[in-house]
Image (cartoon, rainbow, N blue to C red):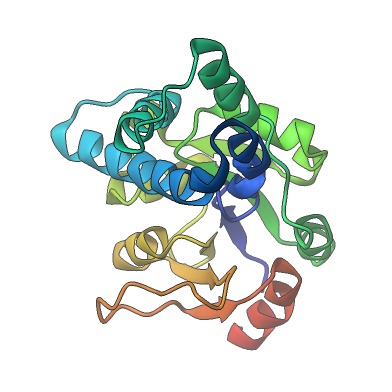
Length: 225
């Protein structure tokens, strides 16, 4: 069976740790904790905005969480340094397995879509910079729904935009909240466990399958047919 695949972008395809080197140059030993907190607050802010019906572009969540980290870690970054970090966030690299994994799935006849909290413009820039945009059939952003994952509205929006159904579509994400959201909506979902230290949220809702890299997904899909 050929599926319609929804690929989360940040943390799944794109390595958000790409900002580490720049942060280390700016703030030294605090870089790792700063980077991790920046990411967690970015997601928290998007969820909170979704619950409050106070949508703003995902880049706003990213910028606001950067400001939070500067205050939390008592780091007085200059305006130019903050701009440089925000610019770098828009051209982050892909994980090493991404290109081969996507090409295998494309050659197997599946439809591939980037599916993100980020705007279509921002995601297009990321995927173009990473030289993988041509592998995708299109980009589906939550921006038209004015809310964020894991709202069921955005997964339905994905099905509507791609002319797919719950039964023939899969979400692929390294974010457990995203996987749980998709499964709760009715899709199947693969959790990409990018690190052995990653923990799947213990909600009693399990991924349809677990992979460590995208090159494992094609076989997993065949096994689920």
